[in-house]
Amino acid sequence: MSDLFDEPSLARIERQIDEWLGRARANHKNILAVDRSEDDEFRWYVRMSGEEKDFTTIWFTLGQRTFRYETYVMPAPEQNAELLYETVLRRNEKLVGAHFSIGLEDAIYLRGEIGLSALNEAELDRIIGTLYSTVELAFWPLLEIGHAKAAAMRTQRNSTRTA
Image 1: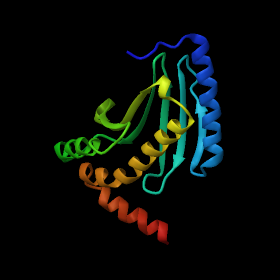
Image 2 (image 1 turned 90 degrees about the vertical axis):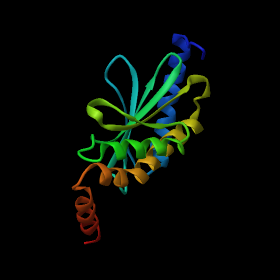
Image 3 (image 1 turned 180 degrees about the vertical axis):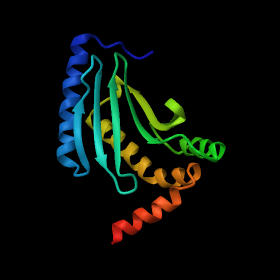
């Protein structure tokens, strides 16, 4: 079992995460926003602009033992659900530190967690990069499997960008 961190330790980690995310925003031009949740939980989000998916928002949650992260990938499939779920399960095999999952209303998410003792600035940067690049690579292929109009939307989107 991982260590249970006390309040002073969590407060130190919380300050570090604030600093690390601030530096990430300053160093990565596609990070549009970094902010904190207003509720009682230790939650942050990083919102990034993308090439394939317009925006990717990663949510981070600090617990007493773990640091969790997740991003919404796409809505529940309208068609080919079995093929879509098989595809994301097969993609899970190649991922390190994250996995696709089915969330609320059968939407597709990318999630992961690490023990707090493994959390540092380099690891946080790796997590952000992994989730961002995985969404960028997987978004349109998955959307085309699960949504009939996706191919037409992609063609329209690409023609708008080049015009």
